[in-house]
Length: 265
Image (cartoon, rainbow, N blue to C red; front, side):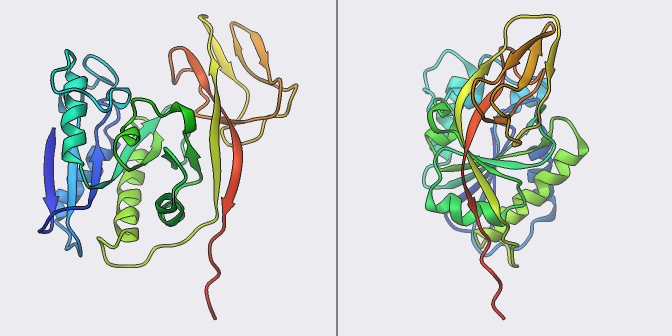
């Protein structure tokens, strides 16, 4: 784990990259900040988490780090021990953790709960939506540390790396670590409600778009040509034919739209 800092003092905010070794977009953003050394108005901790997995260009060494929190210093797995070290390193910090996905090109935020902090900060970050994980947070970083996760774009793409840099700087501006103003956006908020299982098959198809409502009775995916039909309406999140080994993605409900405050005359 690589740990660095911008500014002096004890950081209360942190930027985390490389939780998954096959998602290098956030690492690029951290490296650029370290190269540029921008003047910050409050200290920022910068962390590249799973260096071993990044070196091997694999998602993890022994187990998924973002399912291993809070970890254990005596764990038998690399990620189990690393999770414990990362939780200790992030004590007292609000973390901003960058990821990428195979299911959706446009950035969106993921939070454990829709807290006042999430309501304040996420509309200032250029994301298309905010997703509350609700009952699917076990083992993830934000189950142990106050965290805003962002999916920066398609895994391995140059656009995801560019988005990671843009999202990080917007977050640091929103928390008053970088000077400047942010743009407040209307932001739809969703909550995950269920997992869409994927049966073992040779071919998989997805017929719907993430964040677009699927009506009851509509086909939304297929395994070996056998369609799955929506029993009730839902919003698909992280839906992909090849993103996860055993699930297509998640169903969600739409909770709210956070509306940007009008600019005063």
